[in-house]
Image 1 (cartoon, rainbow, N blue to C red):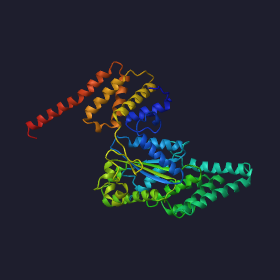
Image 2: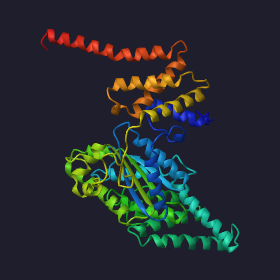
Image 3: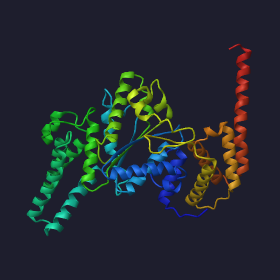
Image 4: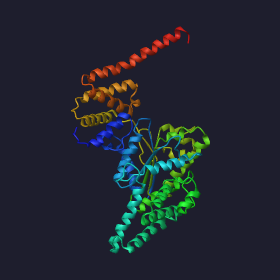
Length: 441
């Protein structure tokens, strides 16, 4: 295998994240295996979004199958292609709709994680606005032969900013969105930091009521649980107008919608999903991509999953010719299959190299050792289809850490102890059963 040099910053992020069983936000390209058709399908969607289209994809797979990894990988591709991205995990506190502001909580999370190529770790909201103004200033200086400090420059910049906001005013809620953008510009121009911060608070959905918004910004509406998605569509058009390729949303843990016990609340969330799906499919949104991760049960359960809502089921169900060993990567659902054993072996090779690179040693494990590790994992799970990348990676990182920190330990010794552990546990359970039987418990 080619020995790649990876910066310490990346190996640190990779080792720490994978040890904890979470997906790294950086360095994914160094451990990516498989998923080529899925990645290519989403990259085609990105091309359409950059041209002014929209797309929505559901990425399904069982826990640990690599949904979050694929979403994060695509996010990194998007940043490299000059998209604005944002991501959020759904939870009981963050939904698409809710009676206690759960929809607005999701919007706020998305705004917190707003990212660009130069700000990949989130918090890019103000940076996007500042880049917009700075770009307009530079263009005006170049095209109109103006210098910094020239009053004519301020006037020219203002006209160009108003030209962008005027286009926004024709969209749903666009008038108020444009007024807040103008308020930010005025605060920027006059050096009034309080005005700028008020505009940013409004754009992040942090104003508690309309009265306060009217007082500070002379705007009569606020972003709330009912309208937050309309503002996402405004953001997608705005970022495209100021030079980015578009806005991509990466929303994970869709299963939390499936877990909503109240059927009315669950249906309301599915109705919002239907609205988002229709907007992207029917051209009602521009420069917008929505990628939602969830389990197969979340989608296919006809009692409380997405398929329980007929309008969604009819749009998402596979056609007659898909399935039966054939795959359709252009449909609305991308079903992640388990990685093959060959792909898992490649993954283990990559992890071994990164671990040695990070801790400064030459790995001694052979491919035969890695294959033995895989076979042991398969035997422990009981069936090939239960072997998920997350389970394999966490166990393998644990093995590598143990070997590195205990020089006297050997691979064969650790693997022998690992295989003996389930037998010991079974024996202990049998003893408990015998004890309970004796007392007829």
